[in-house]
Length: 314
Image 1: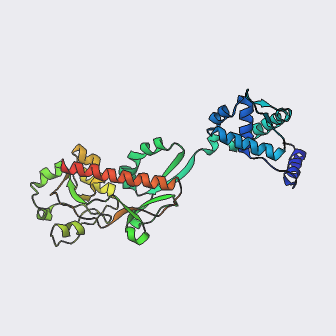
Image 2: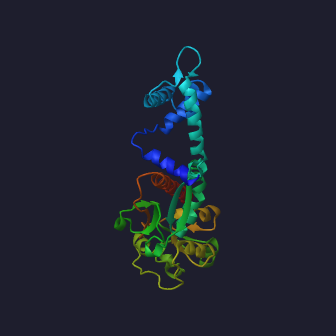
Image 3: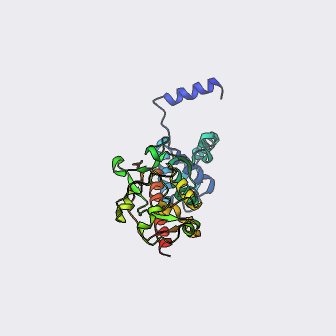
């Protein structure tokens, strides 16, 4: 638009004598004039006919003259209404042509979610389609955090961490116990493991994210943490090592569901213990879409725990 035209618009907008109508009122007037009734305009705008009437009445009060002749027959424009319709149609057309007003540019709400790697791969990503199908208006970005540091890798709208929920005011996720699990190939090499004490000479996989001490205590074993073997600073790597027969992992069944279901891992002894650390949600915005995503994720975690418990009982 030329500079003189912009200057004219600025002067008009700044004038104290100019009273602006609402966009909703203009849209109601244009739809009713084009469609010939308040009812059809209401259907197009997804409001009630009464709402259309009130918006047009407010518009007529603003400009000080009727826009329609109201009677038993179809709705008809007054002379002023016809003149005003041409002006309103042009104004709405200009507004609709602004790229930033188009739905494709505005309808997506961006939501960044941060989670530790194993949680993201085993819990979050497999369930994402259910969320995105139900919420096409939300554009998700999933980033990984660093669980060993109990800190987020980057700023996010919703953050899942691994550590101590109480220290950060977090909401615990995956309310389940950790259990030892091993590959059938390893169990064949080791021979019968009938009681927890039979693990004395077995290769136990080590990770600071899932220490053995809580399970040893639950099993009545006064043993220290394993001191031999590769130290794996990732729960997913510990599970992969267990699947390949390198040792016995202590893990949450929900994170090992597909390996348990396929028989690649077997739980041992039927004895679990509360884990030393927990997955948890940090406090997040109470508004959408963060609040809705957090509620959805809590429900998905609960379902993952139920599904894993069923596998242990099978």
